[in-house]
Image (cartoon, rainbow, N blue to C red; front, side, top):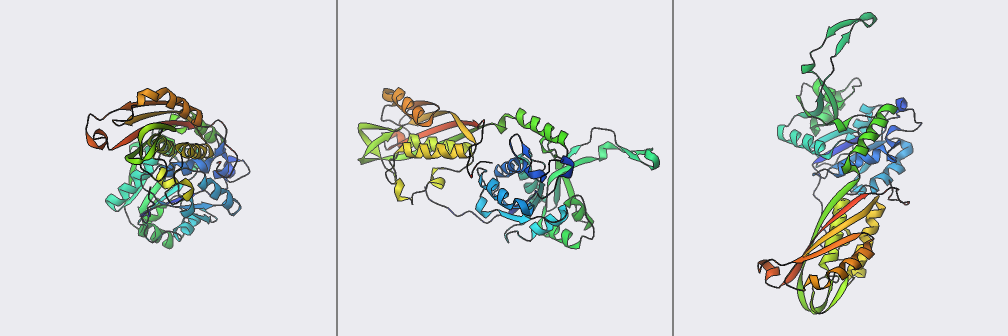
Length: 403
């Protein structure tokens, strides 16, 4: 449970959310129009939270929506909102990117540019683009094969040419580039382009295409907003998440044993800053993992004197509150306890009933040994492994964390 300093980011994502969205006709900037009850921007930020890399995020928004954007950042599990940068976008998409480029950290070498209007873009697409830029040192964009026959029109809307669709691709975002290339492209631009790949291509630099994703479709019209909402509702990953947590503590002869929120008289206790309840702590880790909030050490740490000797129920209640604040509810929990003692089966139902009451959800507990192998087999301590299932709450809670 020690704090660590995050390494300086080498990847940045410029997220464009400053567009007016006139064609959507909702009377507010497109990124702040609601999609399935939450702003489009909130969904786009969740995709970034799922990236393996921990990028610097530079978010371009309208001047009227800076405060709202900051609250949305804080409401997304797994994002470091305090270190994200919000800028006021320019009069065009290209101007917004140019403004955002000026706020990149010195450590950033790879820059991805993404439209918030593509809110369901999977996190793996961002990671793939960044990895391909780093591998090749070239520009990388995502695209889909064109399935329709495409005609080029001449005067009076007459067909002038049928294009070879095998040589065409429907371009999406994110688009990724070596930082120096993108900065040079914007510095030299003399006219507006519809995407950043065109700017880099104008420099004579190569830009390659990798596979995009149907989920990365863009919202421009009301029909596209409805279609995206239907896609979101069909995606089980958008409503259900699973997290896994583990905890390990050694026995301490002078401590009482608290396990599963209960006192076990006559048993050797577990060492720890709090009460050493590996079952409670593993469940907390699992819940935090499910909503991308890190782990117990990261969220609670050991520096807070209020937590010294704190019971597992305290950690469970605090963690459950965080789950609720981030728009999720706990469905069920499963815990496996590994150790030679105590004998879990003797109080299994009692532990399950207690934890279920604390969490307001079904909890199942089982015990096993490690066949005399390892530190648990030698009777030196106890380990616990927990899995938590959460789902999106049917209504968002009030408060600053609600998105």
